[in-house]
Each structure stands twice: as structure tokens, then as C-alpha cells.
Amino acid sequence: MTSDVETRKMRTTRPLSLANPARFFRIANRILPWLSLATAVLLALGLYLSLVASPPDYQQSETVRIAYIHVPAAWMALFVYVMMAVASLVGLVWRHALAMMAARAAAPAGLVFTALCLVTGSLWGEPMWGTWWEWDARMTSVLVLFFFYLGYVALIDAFDDPARGQQSASILCLVGAVNVPIVKFSVDWFDTLHQGSTVITLDGPKMDSSMLAPMLVMAMAFTMLFFVVLVWRMRGLRAQARLAAAALNAPGGEY
Amino acid sequence: MENGDTAAMTTEPSYFDMGGYAAYIWPAYGVTFAALAILVFWTVRSTRAAERKAAKLRRGGDT
Image 1 (cartoon, one colour):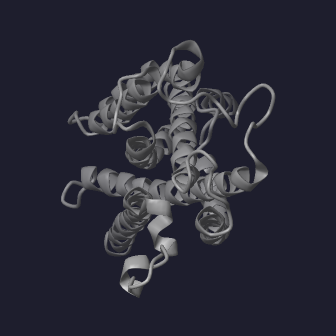
Image 2 (tube, rainbow over the protein chains, first blue to last red):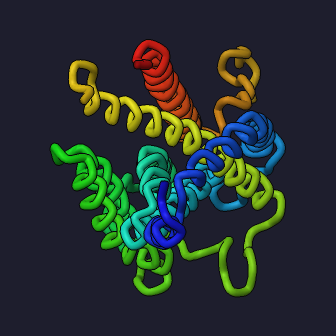
Image 3 (cartoon, one colour):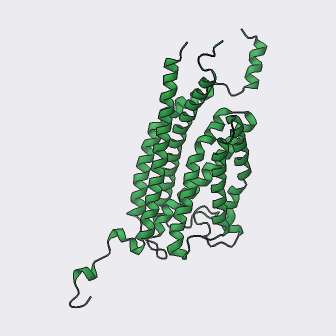
């Protein structure tokens, strides 16, 4: 039996008790079906608004419809990275295993959204600007973001000791966080081919509501989808952690 | 449209032509939904496999 002093000490050195992950997964599993439903509904509505119920642009004609996936993908790329950076910081500073796990679980989704942002951007740029790519500040900084995601995923598995891999990846993630405001403000700070901000500006959105609607609905759909993937992947990581721990205590070795 | 024109020469563009930009718009939507679908399915699949293994371990590994 531990004394009162020892119990109190345990509580202060492990302020986030083991009960937290269990509670997190209980709550996460309960809301998962609702997240999945929301994702499906929002995607369907978003598709309808993007492809059917919104008008072509007077300048960009039908290609403006690419914006309804390109911009939400870009927002997700940044949002997920910020979430990963915060989680990595919490994980490193407070040794919070669940936070580390959340960052790790988010990485593949962030990578996919960034890649989609780049690909849909090229598909939009070719007919509108006459080029698939340009090394302007916005496009280059998003490519850098993509490489930071890749680096994170690669570092996780790069060491024999998974804890070291997680730690290195977390540090890389924090280093790359400086790129996030650069991506956002690149079109303001530099003379870019990429257009300036039209939605998130100090004066509010400069976009017509008929176009803002599909964009926002798709953004919400992508966000719900991200949370679905996040919960599933965290569950998978937890199961993998249990398997790894069991492998260390493999039968034949009990004492 | 002139006399002698057949229907084939003057067909109305369909919705799928997207104002002539079909070659850009449909691949953009296609690659997006394919990538997101693969992300979801891969995630669910790998989690289910890991959870199944972990559950088996718990059942079979009780000492």
C-alpha cells in the first residue's frame, strides 16, 4: 500500500492520470457515429452546392468549382498542422502520451490534405494562369509544409526506439510551425501569382454568399472527416501500443 | 447554325463539359474523393486489424 505522501507525489508527477486516455476513448467512441453521419451529410450537401447549386464565376467560369475543394483542403492542411504542433508541444513538455498519439494520428490526414491542395491548385492554375506551378511564396511555402508532414511521418519510424522517433518527429513539427503564418501571409507579404486572401480578411469575406456557401460546407465536411480519421487512427495506435507492450512481456518471460 | 448542318455538328454542350474545363474540374474532384476515401478505408482497416489482434492477445494471453 502506498502512503498518503507517496500517492500525492504520484499525482503531481503524473498529473494526467491513466484515467484520461480511457475517458477520451470512451467519449470518442460515443461521438464517432455522429461524426461519421455529419461527414456523410456535409459531403453530400457540399458536393451538391459545389457542382450543381452554385453559379459559374464571371471571370473564371466553371473552374471556380475547384476552389470549393482546393481552399478547404488548404485550410485543413494548416489546421491539422497547428493541431499537431500544439499536441507535440503538450506531449513534449508535459510528457502527455495521448497528445503525442493525437499528433501522430493526425499526420496522414494532414499530408493528404496538403497534397490535395497542391494537386487541385495545379489543376486550377493550368487553365486560369496558364501554368501548373510557379515558385511564388504561397505555392513554395505550401510545398515546404508538405515536406514537413513527410518528414514527420518518416521520423516516427526512423528509430529503433519508437519513443525517440516520436520525440524527433515532435521537434520537427514544432520547427515547422513557423511556416504556418508564412503560408497564410505569403500572399500579403510577397508579390505572388497566387491570389490574395478573399475569405479570411480583416474586413470579412469578399466572396459572394453563393460561392461562400459551398466552400464553407465543404470545409466543415473535411473537418468532420478529419475527426473521424483521427479517432479511428488513435484507436489503432492504442491497440498497436498494447501489442508492442505485450511483445515486450512475451510469454516464456514471466517472472 | 446553317442549312445542311447536322445535329452532330451543333450539339449543345452537356453539364459534364463544365464550360470546356471538364479536363480540369472532374480530375480535381475525382482525385480528392479518391484520396479521402482511401484515407478513411485504410485508417479503418488498419485500426480494425490492430484491435482484433490486441483483443485476441487479451483473450488468449491471460495468465
